[in-house]
Amino acid sequence: MKLSAGRDALDERGQPGLAEQVRGPLGTGRRSGRWYVNFERPHRRTPSASTPSTWFLDPIVEPSLSAYTWKDKHEYAHARRLGLIDDTLHAHVEAARQHVLALIGGREGPFAQDWSRWRRDPRWPAPHPPPGAMDAPAQA
Image (cartoon, rainbow, N blue to C red):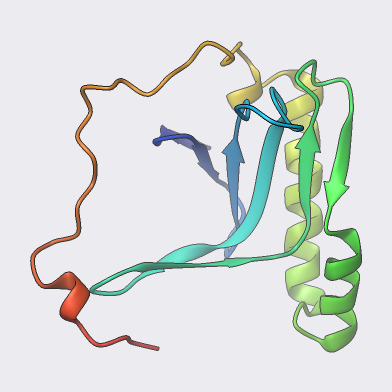
């Protein structure tokens, strides 16, 4: 398991061909204090961007870690019906689901400590693309 702190997210990369991006606790609004886990294909880098691809099914976890809901269940089922998520990928997503639920239940990984007071250090510089990156043609 590899964790790294980003601007507002903790990334955990575990399953082959699948990444779990853990964001939380979320800021203000109706999901305040909740955790959000995004299952996605690992980002592909191009000269001008990083391209993610979500797998539609993401848990939103209560601040107490005592309950969660699955966001976009219907979209995931539709993607399965359309063949966008084949049996192999579905097995990876299911393994990732079980992995994240085990982390939540065991208070492990990013769920092991209280992050509610964590804030980005305002002295950190904002990221900037390299010179000319915005001029590069899009790549498939």
